Image (cartoon, rainbow, N blue to C red; front, side, top):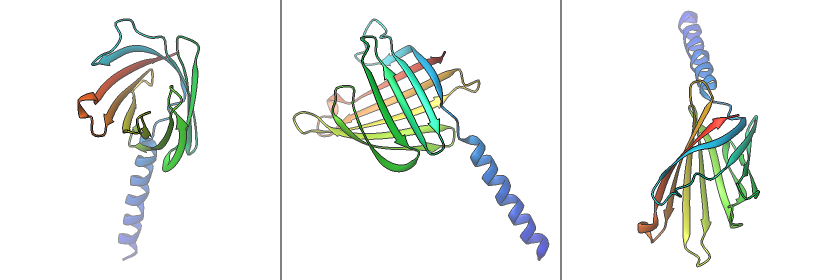
Length: 156
């Protein structure tokens, strides 16, 4: 009986360790190298992401080619955080790690009051040099405006 209990404890510890090892640290400075999706600009904008991940939170400082900077902060345990879009619209966000990916779900309202839902899925390459972000935006009641964008960033 003790042997079975010990075996179960060992399996639990091995499983917990492998789950903990799957969570990636996204910290670093990244520069946009690729942007794919409908209605993307012909010229690649200069965007830099500075990511700081500490324990159960992550901060992202996004700097655009016009010098504008937007800072967003998220809890990684699914708790809500409040941020702003690059256009200054308030957002309600939830972020969580799912295996090796970071998933950020945001909601906000357009000027006319229409709700928007955005999901970002962040993934690092095996060597942690490339950050890929898939951004899916849905406009409630206006599905013709929905779009998906794939962004790739290179670590600096």
